[in-house]
Length: 261
Image 1 (spheres, rainbow, N blue to C red):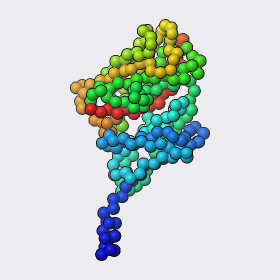
Image 2: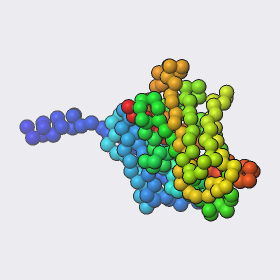
Image 3: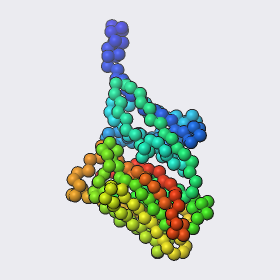
Image 4: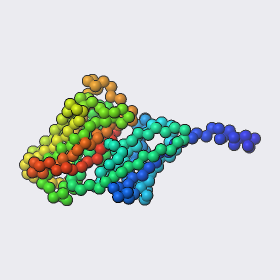
């Protein structure tokens, strides 16, 4: 009976999968203590940190599809994967790899997020959400900044690009100056532009939150917006820092946001 019990246990064992990988910089050096996020198809998120070798792993996973993303360390931009996320489907206890490449960047750093922290987004309702623009490294850049332009596209991980007509946005300056304006533009090619300008002193000299945008998903026009992972992604195409009205390239990291009802 003892041997029979052991055999029965082996029949009921369930194979679990693993998703692992690493994060390295432009010199192929491992990056330690970087946040890696794993989201399942129910929108449940798990986090882990890379170890001293830049490695991470999520083990004991059930069969299914997972969204893997990262939060770049301050001062670094993510080169791959595209839009800083990858979708992996695992089954039958298999293992899959998702690797991230980061590159140190100089100049003005633009971060996108909420007051809860860069890189995360939380909706105030099922169709309305906010996004805050932060600026860092302004003093070190040595520039007199009078504006920022952030160009990108809205993506639904697992479902492709979101038609920009489905999202309307209104910007509001939160910086301590009355002359700052924050505009939002949808373009025919599907791209969007966030433009933050200030044409009078004291310009934008201090690190921190600059503007907050409130977005509305116009489901009545677009129809139901299918979010396979309860996530939206804002994929950065370009960032321009305007100094004395002259655009100079800056950088920002593409960003995954969470919607919750």
